[in-house]
Image (tube, rainbow, N blue to C red; front, side, top):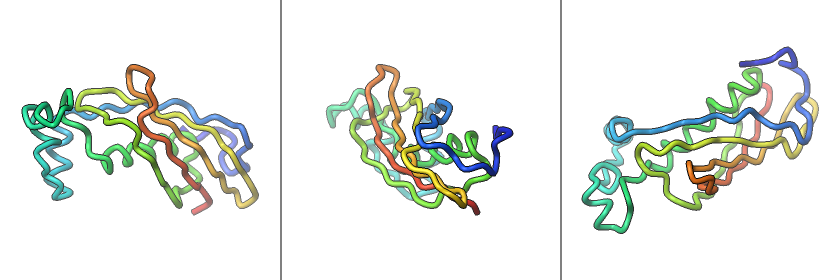
Length: 136
């Protein structure tokens, strides 16, 4: 959803539109097969419960993959150059996550440094991230 500002320098304080993602158990299984991360805690509800979790948690790197489409929907003219995140709470299979963010620094080129948040359905922050976007 690149807008008419495509190519303009992002503005400090500008918000990115909220983007919602949801990964079900079938998504986790496909990711496990592709990545080789087949830890049963991500694939088996009984194993997750024995570990004290309410359901299988989504793989961290699978969650990280949800940030780029959210950023691309905001500014398709800028490429993701760096993404770092801190995981605060698990996200469980079938749980929706809303990604939002704000430009904290912007400059010519153009480039943008963003702070990103991912909230679960209970509005708890589950991931805090930082992304750098710049011209490809």
